[in-house]
Image (cartoon, rainbow over all chains, first blue to last red; front, side, top):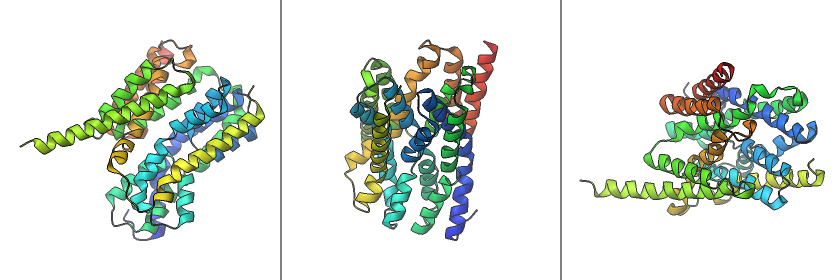
Length: 239
Length: 107
């Protein structure tokens, strides 16, 4: 579909975001379910998803609260998991930085892995899009995703402990993340970053309150940045 | 049981913090340029943080009490493998799910 108007941009966004409903349903249900298991009521579980709207960070916070970690540690660890959102924001800035402030604020609230990945790919493919078309496309991608995030948090919380453990829903998270990471390995530097982060994360599992994640993530980012510099230098000096 | 005031401090704090992270560049930087060294590190946030988050869960899942589980290990490998080959998120998720349930049923 060729984007000619703001409306067609929005509709293409909806179409491109739709497949992620498959991911969001188990993910959101699992959060609602684990939240009620941790003692949250249905309203609190839903409020968590509406206010924070970040799956991985919510799971991290829930886990740490159950371990009775200090408030500051819960916030820092969960926000560390969400640090990638700052990268998404940075990466979106050249494309939507000129939009009105209220639209950028709304887009910020709605920045999730799926809306970011789908939108940035579209912006790179179609540089002729105007800023209003880009915003419309972005809001299109979240239209099928975010309502399901709320709705299935609610359904998961209501169903609660009725879901048997043999469904192995715990593994929906690793599978979802692995599936989303796989297409991101565009260069050797990405592979190096992931490899170093994984090795460090396995070495620091004894570090309390998920702080090992921050250490592993920073190590991976530094390794990726250094690998990129090395690759650039190698390319520069090659005949 | 999680204390209620503790819970709401975390929900609201996490909501504000997450919004700040998502808004910090699009909202506050706008069209100004960021230093190249920072962008270079930020580019690898996703590929570093997400694997670091899942690696311990794949090797030592909480659901099995931390014991390595062949079905989960194979499902993770299938997801990553299919994702790398097809670049298709949905195919990777379905492949991982089928592997997980297939092996949980068989083993």
